[in-house]
Length: 166
Image 1: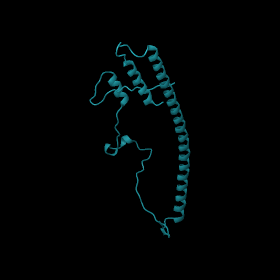
Image 2: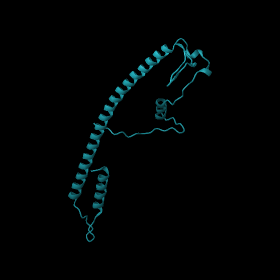
Image 3: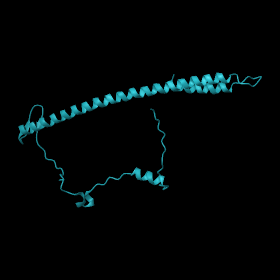
Image 4: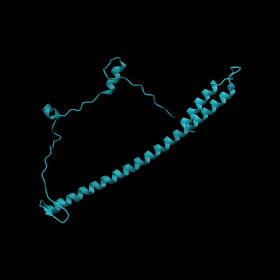
């Protein structure tokens, strides 16, 4: 039974509760009939929730298996990347600073520039023009301020409802 079917059953129960005999005005169904119907709906709901939780557990197991596979593939990639670096170093050694043109490739050298900052340099020793600062919200401090009654435009406290399954 799907969640949608459970919802339909609840609506059907509501419709049953509204059905009355046109002559007497009494409900067509006894309290016992309605209780049995509610009990069946609750059992179906419980079964559906249990099945959904079982599905989540299976999905978690699949995700964990994929994580293990990803970790193995990443380790393999790192090994291949290291092999590429070793082959590149061998190529550099073979070229020994010379250029070489083959039928398939051109091997030559270029110069690039990069900045190397030693560990002895303190960031405080540089002018602000040469320091990048990343700004971000301190959500912990903001939450504490909101809880203490301080208000900020455009910032509010959300209350999330979390499902706990044990």
